[in-house]
Length: 388
Image (cartoon, rainbow, N blue to C red; front, side):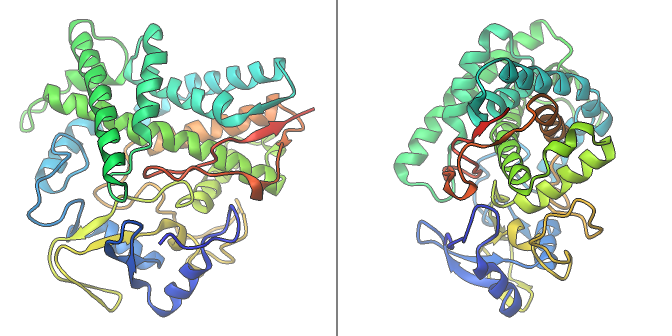
């Protein structure tokens, strides 16, 4: 791994061959480590929902013991404490502000030159502003916040070199110090933001979130929401422009926009990021493969979402398809709490671009656009666009 892919949109052809002949196959990761690769929809869903596959090898210390990136009762306790703040209703209340931000950025581009890099001038500013406002980062601290987040976002804790890991650790240490100062400020002067609400959470059985848990939660929100959202906006816009579908969103109904967002998520998941590796907590048989305790298991959403048993003609972009739900935000106990906000952000971004930049088109052929490869998420390194 990684396997060759023929273009910017379709998955590696090897995924289809493996899915048909051995949906759980032995592979070697980029750093030479052996792992099991899971490529069918059914097997991917099974791994994500099965507690016998954890986020750390059995017996290992949990590096994210203050975060949701852990297993068992510790994870369940944290999820119970924070789930109210991440309820669909709470996140839906953010929709007007997200739409306002997307509209402002798109309108600002329209007033300038007739070309731009959509990564640097639209997607990244939108994503970091949404996250910053969600956490309650003061306007004067936004530039510093973005620098710290950018430095930490390229971390690859599973396949990176020792130098990569050292740099990532330093970046996360600085981001953690920023988050700790933010938590302290919110304890003194709470506001109408997610971090203040998390500080106020208390449960009779689960207690409160500790300062360490709050800091880790802030860092988790940043790492899960910033780069992934920016990449999804750019990859989705790239796909919609290549398909000739973006302009129609200028007059689309909310239901039509939501359908396009779901199809973007299905077709681009995996290309923009895959779930963290799982580790078998005991000997497990999966789709005929005997997986040993401690073995690394890599699920591939990109392969699962192109499984023809669940998605007819899976390579075709079809917002009107009626098929099984995608697994883009996970499945089971680690389902992403921020899924409603991510969907809102994508819909707002696509709609704003369609309405304010008529004639928007790619500034370079889709196949020539370079993609980033650092960290757990990837996307266009730059997305040159132009408009009339």
